[in-house]
Length: 161
Image 1 (cartoon, rainbow, N blue to C red):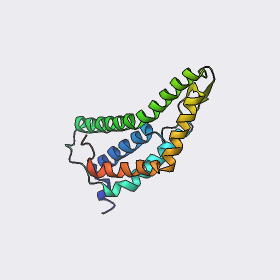
Image 2 (cartoon, helix red, strand yellow):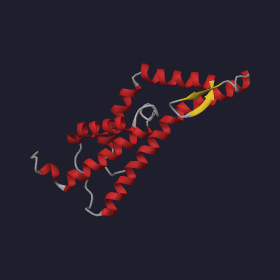
Image 3 (cartoon, rainbow, N blue to C red):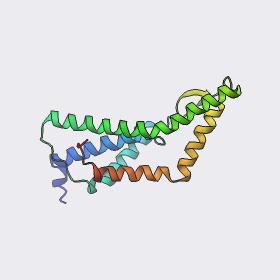
Image 4 (cartoon, rainbow, N blue to C red):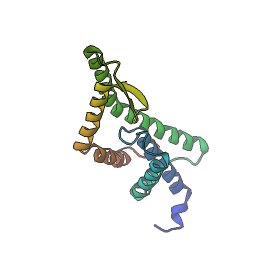
């Protein structure tokens, strides 16, 4: 590719859509949405991943109108929200189970502040949440999430949700 052709409007639109998809996936995926990670680091990581995946993504076949581009951006945000919801559902189920176990054991008043979610939760729920995150790391879940981003780019074209 020429350096001049990289700044063609189709390539700029594809980079914007790619950056929106990756940044919102990082905002909603379980490990990457941690509140203790600064927003500037998340944005830098999203930009870095966008630059890496930019050359493997063909430009989308969109009409060059503001409405089509806005709809494509909205579809990318919706796709990231659905994926994040389904992946976070397992962790939230474990947190709810921990709350129920704590209630039955009498530990419901013994709560800790969870810096990851920003809420106060019972000890058993905190323990189960940490175990879920550790299991995610043990089975390379963070690598699987990055591979999911790559596979979503090949299976679902930009603006195609």
